[in-house]
Amino acid sequence: MEFPDQLASPLLSKTGDNVEEDHSSPSTSGSLMDSKLEEENSPIKQVAMTVSTEDDPTLPVLTFRMWVLGTLSCVLLSFLNQFFWYRKEPLTITAISAQIAVVPLGHLMAKTITNRVFFKGTRWEFTMNPGPFNVKEHVLITIFANSGAGTVYAIHIVTAVKVFYKKELTFFVSLLVVMTTQVLGFGWAGIFRRYLVEPAEMWWPANLVQVSLFR
Image (cartoon, rainbow, N blue to C red; front, side, top):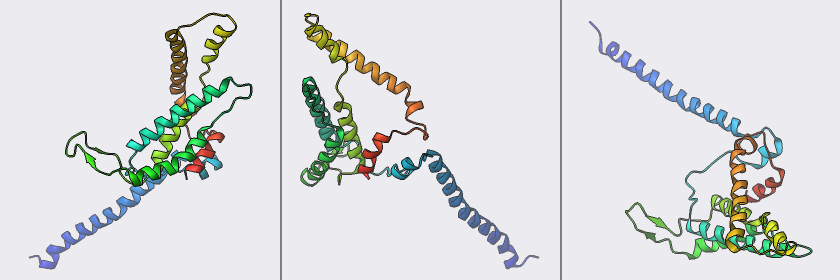
């Protein structure tokens, strides 16, 4: 005949085993997370000290102010840099200027724009002001500005044909030349991204300035 304490002992032992497993599982997941972060971290000291491997998935990214400020930065830098490119001493406005300028504008929009939720309860639900201006919005706006900060190299072809060869190119032909070369460049960038961008061993010193400014 088994006594009550003997009947309860297997339950207690199993519970103890479960408790030990529960205590061991966070350490296992934590070690896996640490190893993953270690793999993502760059072996280059300057990059490891500047670029963080941590992420906050709760921060909103594709916000109204990001699209407005990003589009304006891209359009303005593209127009101004291309316009002043034809001077004997070209004036170039870098993306860092936009990166600094959008910070007060982003905080101003976060304080003044309404936080009303539109189309509430539907799949199209959105708000123009999801909260404080955050670093992810800042990074995307700077990427927009970087996209428009550089001049279009193919525009030199259009200019040379008109100035030196005295031939006129229609707007459609000029646009086609510019667009094909730009798309070709983005295509090559996408192909070599896995070799020149994604590996932790690759680094671009000029970008560390902007990354440190984000932090």
